[in-house]
Amino acid sequence: MLRHNQFDVYCTTADNIPSLMHEIGRIRELNFREVGEGTGCALDIDRFDRDYLHLFIWDREKNQLVGAYRLGLVDKLIEHKGISGLYSSTLFHYDQRFLNNMGNAIEMGRSVIDSQYQKSMAALLLLWKGIGTYVERHPQYTHLFGPVSISNDYSEQARRLLADTMTLHYYDSEQAELVMATNPLPTGQAQWNASLLTSLADLQLLSRVIARIDEGKGIPVLLRQYLGLNGKLVSFNVDPAFNNALDGLIVVDLRNVPTKTLARYMGQSEALRYLATHQYFSDI
Image: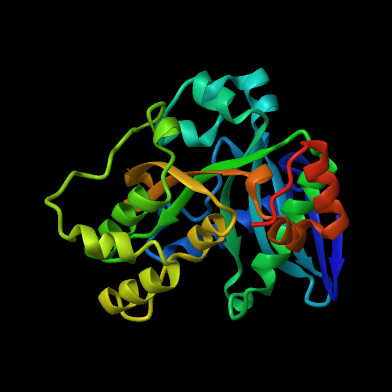
């Protein structure tokens, strides 16, 4: 799909890469454990992997895996498996109305970067350029959605602040009515006054506040990535199978992403062509 320096980006099904799937499962588990997540098994491989696409980066010089992302084509999965064929349905209860409101969507998940490539954002950016390329080549898909994790490595106070702030500022209340978490975040006594939560619409300020609560931390990288694409949360779930990670179900309408931002991942002419296909331009 893409080539940048010594890195190649591919997207294929699990049955085409059986040996590489073992490596993807290994680095998933190692890296998720490091941030207080993980399944506790030797490999993080589940029943959904065989039906999803796997977008990954290969380092030709070192002959090793850099990172990977799992993509589920919702229309294909629903056709063959029904809603139970979607990983997110194990964390959140929703029906066809929720999916219909999005239209053609890709479920995103299991993003991982090998530890030696985490020192810069280059690998994650290249993964997202791969996602952008896939969408540009398959322009019928207008939405990305999936669970984004706030790991157990964050304190309960920080997790609650993130959830409360997202619910106030980055929430789709209409879609949220169609979604129910399988294990909701417990309702606790309000810890934050309204004026503080109102001011935290500024993500840089929110990140600084989180860093004061949990030294050295900020808004999780993937959550910030989705918010940068005008993503909206619709529900929060605590996942006991993933070391009690807090998962927010987030939805991105790619037609609402600013042209300049979309071009970062697709290329300028490709982004304009994609938006023209959907007769929608945003220069916000």
